Amino acid sequence: MQRLKLAIATAIFALGATGGAVAAECGTDRKIDIAEMNWPSAAALAHIHAKILEEGYGCEVELVAGDSVPTSASMLSKGRPAIAPELWIGTVQDQWKKGLEEGAVKDAGLAISDGAVEGWWIPTYVAEQNPDLKRVEDLPAHAELFKDPDEPDQGRFYSCPPGWGCEIANAALFEAYELEDSFNLFSPGSGGNLDASIVRAFEREEPIVFYYWGPTAIMGKYDMVQLEMPEHDPEVWACNVDAACEAKGKSAFPTPPVTVGTAAWLSEEAPVVFDYLSNVALNNVQISKMLNWGAENKAGAEETAENFLKTEEDVWTQWVPADVAEKVKAAL
Amino acid sequence: MFEGEFPEFIDTRPLRYWLDDGLNWVVREWSYGFESAAYPLRVMLNTIEDVLLATPWWLIILALSWLAYGATRTPLLPILVAVGLFFAGLMELWEDSMKTMALMISATVTAILFSIPLGIVMARSQIVLRVVTPILDLMQTMPSFVYLIPVVMIFGPGNVPALIATIVYAAPPLVRLTNLGIRHVDSGVLEASQAFGASPRQRLLGVQIPLALPTILAGINQTTMMALSMVVIASMIGAGGLGYQVQQGIGRLEVSRGVFAGLGIVVLAIIFDRITQAYGKQLQEQIGLAGGRS
Image (tube, rainbow over all chains, first blue to last red; front, top):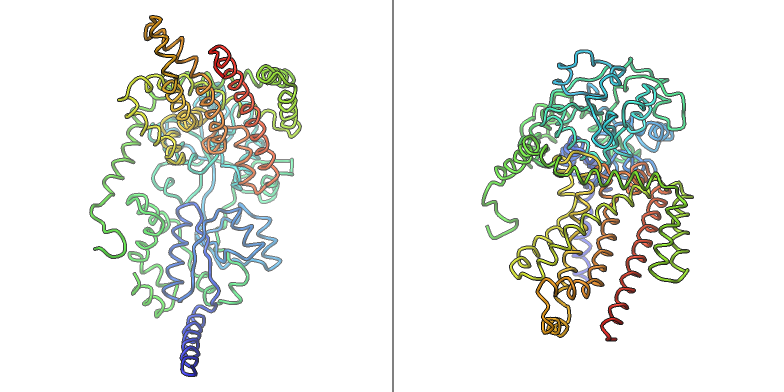
């Protein structure tokens, strides 16, 4: 009996010791949950960080499904998930800023080093055939081109699905440019529908005017031209993204800061992880390359991430100390 | 190879390329044809929607209440219908309710046009039954998200793909129940009609279909309900109405918006469910009387 107890105690001690060792390297034995957002670049980044944190730093990692608004809301109120690897601050501006001030969340660093693009686009072949269509102001004169099949005397502008921050911004611009008389603000209902509508138009070489953003696989695959808007004006924009504000104005989209968002507890309990995350920015070209590989090889997020780790060692080994890089490489 | 994961025997990528490129090819070459084929659907949906939106609200409440009275001959259901619709109006959901109703009515009407003849053919031919049944199973079990995007790419975003997706999902029960209703007509009655010298056509139109009507009406009831259950999914590909409100509620974390629109869908469901059921019951009683059986 005594020996059994001893054996159990030793076993527990041994377990505790190894557990402690894991925690020491990662910094925390709390499970680190990473939001796998429902668009490809963020999903791939989630898998990349998960792999490096798990294999390189020995953290306990879990991927959870996410989307800008619900994920940031949950991070702000509950501190879960711990990491949002590609957070478009612009879509959740007010709440996130407040959370930063109150210390509920922290931005570890940029996720896209040279910033992202956001705007209203037309296909290049439309721009070439209509040289006088350059600015958003020119749209009403060309409404005929972008005919809404459900209401043929109006044009159709493809906006954002409900819940995306850009939905409010697009509606504001629509109002500021007085497009109501010549265009319908079409809500695609889901990101998949927006993508499908765009791909359909490009495949059939039809005119389409739509909201889109990059870096994305679609932006990399099809040639498109951005419609001009006056330079970004933060004051006008603040009103445009506030549903309650009435004096909507004309202003280009801001170059949206895209950061790695973390719950505040991460930097306190696992500074190593936080430091790692402050170092992981990729640029537009690198992300487009990664996404294109994924699209061309029909790879999911996990496979895309693995391929990135295998083929872009020069990039990611810069993010981590040499011994961590070795461990990750060994696990690939 | 007998341990762990299933081994990779073939590379599925060529198949996936073939499917995806094939879809793009269909979109490039055939979508114009598909679009014109779906034109009648577009006209029907837009007309029903326009009519419902142009009709004064009190007239619609009155008409549906009257329909409910016709079905039950009691004041209870009409009052329920009126209160439900009034609630939808109060919650600022009138326009959305009408749009959803238009989608549901169009889907049901189209489903009736296709399903009842198909159900009749199925009841008369064992071969058709064997071919159609697995297709119906597929239509009912294939997750609708799978065909939403191809439907959009082929028919273009907007109301029409939403209507088509709704029909695909909602039509099968009507086909099944039409088939079932006709097959279950009492063989004694059939023999009697034969003995009186009825031709096959007379038997179908005069005996089988009338006696199967309660079952067919149950099918229509099922189809209406399933069409309503599709409205939220249909809103993901551009259908407006209550489903879109629910979608917005989810997207913007406005629980209230989702709850109100959800209740609006419930109201529509209750109204159409009770009315079609009541008519079914009425019909069954009439047939019971006419046939002289209990």
